[in-house]
Length: 377
Image (cartoon, rainbow, N blue to C red; front, side):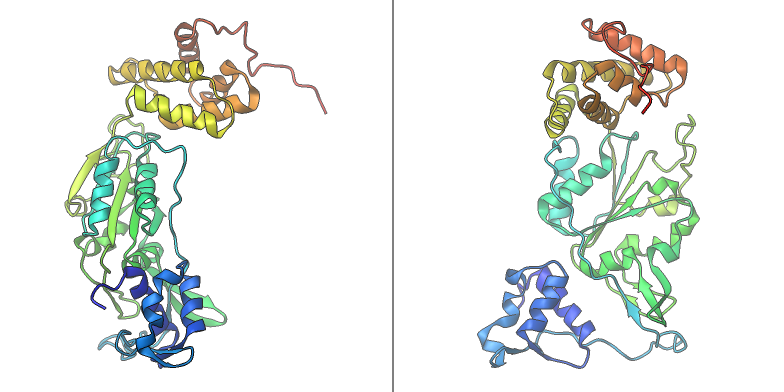
């Protein structure tokens, strides 16, 4: 069993948790447990081997299963007796047909494929596909993927877990970080630069070491394959230009625990053309010329932004929003205008005017804008 698959190990551990006093299991128990975790028959095939069958439909897993430790750890006798539970639902990212591999995607795939503990910090402007890239890398490899959205209120209770009242009993409910550790999953800390010093509870975890759950005394060991990837708009030093006012300055000791940092820029025009084209296919409104014009328009704005000529930028996500809006209204200028309405009036007017220069075939006179008169129902 030295080559036992990770999925089989997880099924064994779950069986031990659900049936702590049992070593012989019915096939139905094994099958139902695997099914509840999102696994198929091939994942528990080793557990129903004829060599360990003790009677029809019953298998002796004593040689493989690890008994659940029921003894309290010294110093925690008052709380360790409380039941500890974890959400057993599996989380697997789905492959997205609109995804186009580019940039650091191949590097992220190699890191995840190695199953080494190798924390990665990915930074870049909003809307350039950081989170999407990590999600699709996990989907490509069929790896379990747990995403935690970080905000200024995120604390140890949100990350590691806390006491909950379930069915009239107080139990310790393990949080997403402990779940990822126990399942050997990919943990994504999304927008980690929105956090406060409350996330310092992750220090030891970012070293790939076991964590002592202070509230129960339980020691959680990270399983092989467990890894942490953080995404952020800044490099953890705050936002000097004020674009990301909620971005905080992250403790340097926390940042130092990430093995590598990736600074992701926007994709090249050729890649972005493919992305926009795929979204047009998704929404059933393909216009190759419009896609090319949109990408050129966004590229000019970004170059001007990097030269401090404008204060706003058109992200890849914003282009995809324009495509979706275009599929609804069948109106290029209206789609653009609606999707950049959040900018101030001067910026909005300048961006709209620039597009009419990029796409000389489109003018405000030719296209109906959001100032249309709508019929009252």
